[in-house]
Image (cartoon, rainbow, N blue to C red; front, side, top):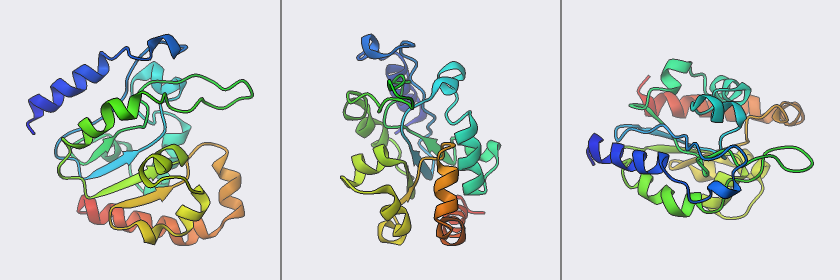
Length: 194
């Protein structure tokens, strides 16, 4: 895949309006890719701040994820190293009782495989949150998958979603900081050649 053909695919994705009538803020597909990326971060869907800026994880969740990874912003947004491909490319809206709606169900089946087929150098995929994990691995519990992350290596590394709610979960599960994060940082450093 050449940069030009991936650029054409990304342009088609960014022009997508398939579920526009269901998006409260309208379509604004957000993804960051290069055919040379070695680490893929598969996440949920953009939040409102990401929708506004067009930059993935440009919010407190991104700060937490980068801290987990031991990665600075420049490396995180270097598409030559890291691809950011959520399960839904547009902000899906809020649930009546709070929290973001799930990613639109049209998005991943329509675009995901096309994007991934162009990313030939991916060596590890971080499955961030339940939507990415369930799509790739099938139904299961995030905590169980994160606790048994070694079962998914070398292809996948499951992680919880890095939202503010995860802070309480981390306190209840000290093994995450003690065991998972050091292994995560080691895998990411190995993949990125640091």
